[in-house]
Image 1 (spheres, one colour):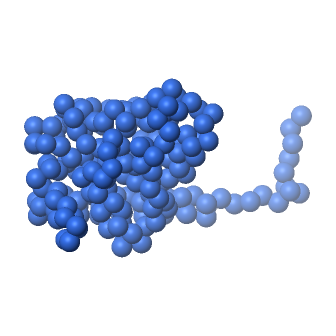
Image 2 (cartoon, one colour):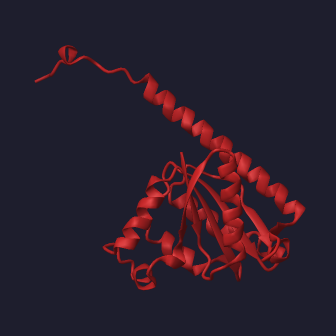
Image 3 (tube, one colour):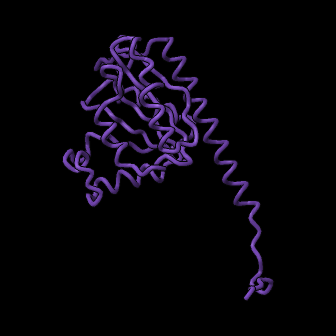
Length: 199
């Protein structure tokens, strides 16, 4: 099972992207493999003009398509997720998240922006036919601190939410793997000699 870490921050580095990578590292410790995609690395003109023929856009869409789960991180500005992320999600087909588990992560200046995930981002993820959108993780800038010598320091309350979100995603991924495995196991091939064609 594969996980895509999708960073929707318009700046590098950023708190939301660092938090996203922290979640990815924690998932790796549980045996999951992941890849990274930062929307800001894509050619801006191709994203804004929805140039579906662009090779980088095709590759990015393929990364989303091949993932079993997508962890999406964004900063919150004026009670909305980033325009960079919105531009990328607009490139996906109507069922671009079909069958996928999605864990939304966001950072913002204050707790007053917390509901932006549920009222702005979650409906879009559902509209893209996500299999299951897990409970969101939101942290204020004061709860996510980065220093060159200590790295990322996470407030204990948020650390608990992160652990819960990671465990929830991991459990759902393993359940999804069992479902796919059992479906493949239950398939019984039919010898060619037993195949009847109706005219």
